[in-house]
Structure formats: structure tokens, C-alpha cells
Image (cartoon, rainbow, N blue to C red):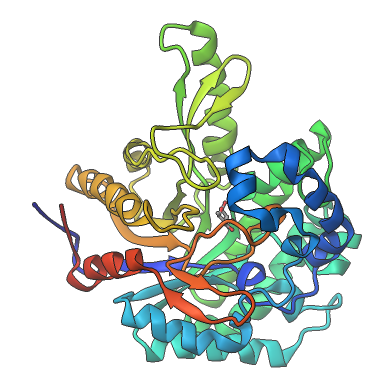
Length: 415
Ligand code: FCB
């Protein structure tokens, strides 16, 4: 069967500055230095035996230091050549705030020039840039002021955004202000796993409010400079199902979880979205009060279950907003590359079904173009369409990338 996608559909992959560029200095790099030893020691308790055996790098502290990462900062042209050869017509990446404004109020024109070259390199290859302005990392001075917990965060963020958009706005049509605000809220301020490792109900409330305010202010700033541009937030949306379908308590737990993870941020930023997004990784079964199980028949190297149909249900729910929708991330860690092609096709099949039923989906970005630095997990999870040899930095296109390329080039999924 041939499933045809709408004309002009954006096909590509996503990356983020901190995970691929190398050579950054920000709140995460500082945290990595302070925590690498501990993370290596804890790997034995965190991961299952098969994962420990398959990925012994997790026991080494250097796994947890982003360092030179993929050196994409210097090799972006080579990487975009690969994306082009794979039939992509769009690419999502992020601008690193700590490069643009390394000290409060001191903006670095050289770094703007760098990203101008990045955008130009994409355009020269026929790739539409989809630009994220904040993919979790903060300049150290922003961290010292309290990061997103600080009342000042929205002002500082929107000032940085204004600077970037004044300089680069002419060549960018799509901006994502923030990446996955709720992931930061949960992992940094509720569970305490990511910097600044808090577990505070009050901090959660503050960060929710400040990140929403940051988006709202940035949205207005961008539109003041360029009214025709398209702005959104790159949101993670999880699918939830009650563990026991006849349990009222499980259904109640579902409602609460769904509200905080998928709905509240959209509510706080209402009317400030030109498009909506979905970053889909999790099909969660929830048991009261909050136990979550996302395993499936087939799972990724991180043991995240693969359930493509969850994305369809999420898209159907977004239909009511009547906005264009982009899948700004969807992917899996799969070092053997024996599940990736089916993963992509499976999700695209369900996306296509949603489109047929009237959902206005306009693009898909696989996470990720390259293997990269997966935050507190480090380098062992392999998400890339392209494999990176971290010793030599050699790039090797995985077989699944060619399968995805066929779809991108023809705008058709054959199943
Ligand atoms: C998403 C993040 C992205 C990457 C993938 C695996 O939540 O936005 O940076 O880590 O997960």
C-alpha cells in the first residue's frame, strides 16, 4: 500500500546544540564535571544487566562529559551534506544561549555569525531550518541567578531571543522558543535528577510559571520583529492509558498526569502558538497514584516501549486547536539498528492515518540525525540515523537512514 503525504511535507531530523556541538560552557557542562564519577558509579543500580553488558561505557566517568560531543560545531556542513543525501528537506537544531550571551548583556557577534553560516548551509542544501532557541542549557550566569526558577528568567530569555531574531530572523521562518518545558520541570525540579537537582513542589510551580512567561514574552518579541514568522513550543506529549481499564482510581491518576504533562503548559501559553508540536516517546500505562509503566512487546535500548499508535491518539486530540502540527521529535536508541526502520515506518503509518482523518500534520523530524550526548545518560544510547565513532568522529550512515530516505525522497510510505 502507498501512503502519500501532503505536498510540501517537511522531512528531516532533529539535534540540539549541547548534545552535538561540542565545546560548550554552560550549566550542564559544569554539572557534568561535578557528577560524572557519581553517575558512573550509579550505573549498576540504574540499568538492567543486559544493558550493563551491552553498554559497558556507562561505567566510565567520561561517558558523562559532553566534551567535544560530535564536533558538529565544526562539521555541520558535512553533517548537512549527509542529511541532504538522505532526502531531508528540513532540519531542526538549536541555538546555544551560552555562546550568544556568555556574560550578562554581552552578546557575541562571532557566534551569531556561526549560526548565520549554519542557516546558510542548510538553505544551500535545500533544508528548511526549524530553529529552537532554548534546548535546556543555560549560560552559567543565568544559572547563578537561579535559572528558570528566577523571576528574571522570562526577561533575560526574551532579551536574548530578541537579539537573535533581530540578527537572524530574515532567514528563519520557524522558531521553537523552548524545548520540552515539562521534561525540565519533572527531571530538574521534581525528581531531582538533572541540574540543579531540586525536589521541590514550590520550585515546580515557579518554573512552570516562568517558562510559560518566557515563551509568551519571546513570542511577542519575535512577532514584533517579524510578524509573518511561525512560532511554537517543542512539547513532549505522552500518551496515557489506565493500567486497569475498570479502575476509577487509575483513571483519576491518568487525568492528573495528563493534565500536568500535556495540557497545563498549553493552557498557560494559550493564543501564543502559530503551530503545535508533538515530541512523542512514551505510551504510559498508569496505576494510581502515579506508577508508570511504558514497556511494550518491543523496546528500545533504554527499555522504552515502542507503541506508535499512541502518537495517533495524541494527534487526534490536538485537532481541536485547528493549528498546523509538526512532529518535532520521535526516535529511539537502537545501537544494532534492528528496530529503527520499523519504528519510523510504524509511526508514519499512524501519522498518515491522522492526516487522512483531517489532522493538519505538516512535518516529521526523527530524533536524531546523529548519535549524541543523551544528557545524564551520556553517550551510550544511540539515537542517530548516523552512527558516530567517538574516537575518530567518523560518521557512518545506518541502514535505517536509507529506509527513511526513500520515504523522504518520494513523499510516500510504502507498507
Ligand atoms: C527528548 C529531548 C532530546 C533527546 C530525546 C531522546 O526528550 O528533547 O534532547 O534527549 O528526548
